[in-house]
Length: 63
Image (cartoon, rainbow, N blue to C red; front, side, top):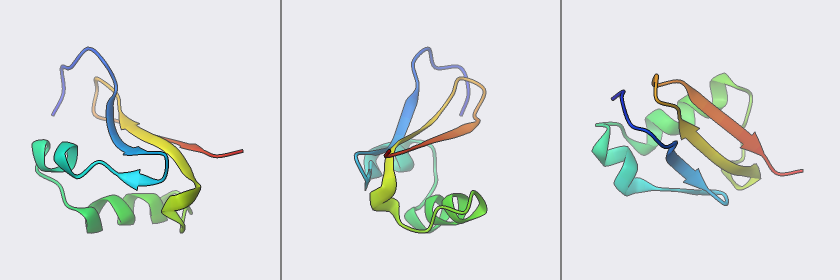
């Protein structure tokens, strides 16, 4: 799950990028749980979420 050069997007413009979740062996419920851990309850508020090269999730909320 680590070692890619560019951010690995899991959400773009409020929509889950399912192909990327599949590539990392995760599911939509897993993604929603991670968002809830960050107190994000409406996925439509997420501009984008990505994994960095170290596997850390970064979430950017729409302003």
